[in-house]
Image 1 (tube, rainbow, N blue to C red):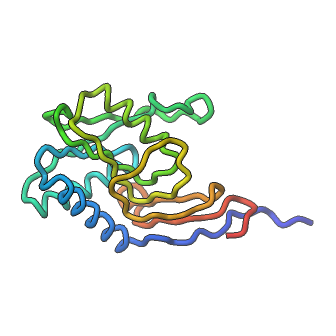
Image 2: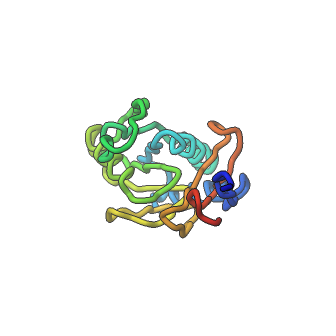
Image 3: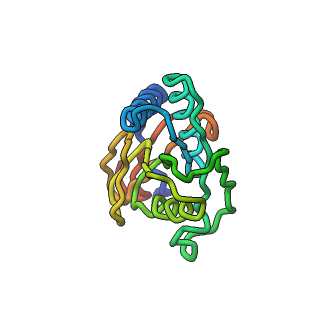
Length: 189
């Protein structure tokens, strides 16, 4: 008799305090690179990128004493895998007042993997206007790029196998903050 297949155990690579420190560091890096908060706009990529953008925006406001506009950028219809992946419903795109023209836009996402999500985000952003510059902030960079895209601000570089899954859980959507990594089904972890 064969034992039933179980998901391999996930291992925690970032806990709540690690995520907090990473986001604080990313916020300070953004301010340092931009020489302040002038002309900054944060756009989170749904779903968890939006929550991360809001958190980074709060840290920027605490440090600089001014609110940095935060919005969301839906990329659903710009994805190149719509035929292969089950389609999810479009999420709202919320552009802060003042738009993106002439601004420094920081795209925020939870995990950078192949780069295809970021490519879709750049296409979506081009339909909204023409920023002076676009930068990328991610909580986790796991490698395996398929496109020439890199993050400007990274919370954690996490070398991983393609078969592994990286799961980001945030208090806003999942009830707790953590980043987990697990091997694919049938593999040892």
